[in-house]
Length: 191
Length: 284
Image 1 (cartoon, rainbow over the protein chains, first blue to last red):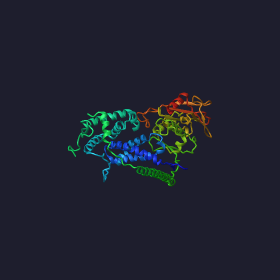
Image 2 (image 1 turned 90 degrees about the horizontal axis):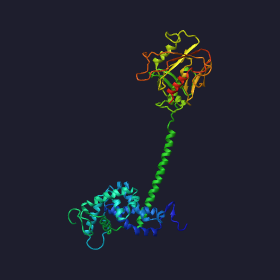
Image 3 (image 1 turned 180 degrees about the vertical axis):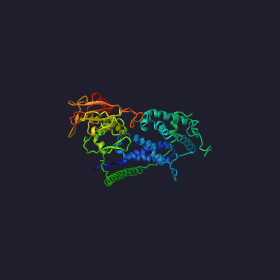
Image 4 (image 1 turned 30 degrees about the vertical axis):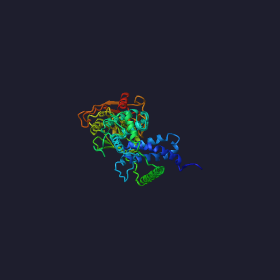
């Protein structure tokens, strides 16, 4: 049948339509993944690619719905997947730095600031990080966060409260956040 | 202290410079790999299950089928060594008086609260080769035998007419265990063991005729019409060997039934109070 993209029970996504979706959503997903992984951009890249691949496989079902929500949920669930945690115990060495710096100017302060924010996030548990990212980066309500994570709203509230308490006493963010101004240096000295 | 707004701003600001390098082609390749893995897992699962089924079938085929347990059920005295009788699944249930005891035993086994065979059919109990221990007490049985044997001094049968027979069984109150049994004169008489509750819970007795025994239902109240019975109460000396171990209830059925020999007997000779007692002690 002309135009039928379904083959052997497997739904192939429309290339152009899916490419547009990837282009529009990958940056936001990647930023969320970076926060979820506490600044591990290589793992974040892998998480996003994994989530998008699953979106690709389910494209015929979700294209008419909120595909980004599906991708977001897949991303967070993969982040919380215990099997991935086991696999990720091994350290991964990369030849090149995968992250891309913002263009222009001296980015030293940005890097230090980002490191301090990410290090503060790394002090949280996976679920606490997921709640913080969903609530304050992806701007979901408590109810939506609970539905996204498959937990109770009360659990979201308590987890969120614990996460915020940890962040507030984090030495990296103790002085508050001021964009462009480093709040702390990783090893006590300016890089 | 960082506020919520500051945190929100920090999360957005500090990730603003991050750029993802995720081309669509890479996503497609990964998706195809996932699809292959899924299919591979499915195929592997089907293959494994098939192997398991085939292997299981083969194992079942080559596994020797254990022969059906057809050994007779053995009734022991309480010492565990002296065999009172054996009864196989295909043996007629009521051919000799001693086998009537089995019906008591099966009654206990199928109704007793602590019985491992509770709710099990009698036929299965008989087929299962189940050893039933502590069902009869040798000392108590000897006591019974002496009491019912007219040739023994002190027997309640001494001096009785020659056409009278004695028989009896001692059932432990509360548990219904058969503690002692006497099959009657020369082992052919009718006794308490001729009365039991069958698999349907019906009181059943045996009728003694020269040609053998027939099972029939007891008359309500435990006594069939036309019976010609006499009942003699005897006392069992508690100090004699065979008394139940300390702590167990004393046997209550110290009765000997006597009946005219050679005459048709219609019932086991239990009065209503005995039937009720047996029912209360043997039924769950």
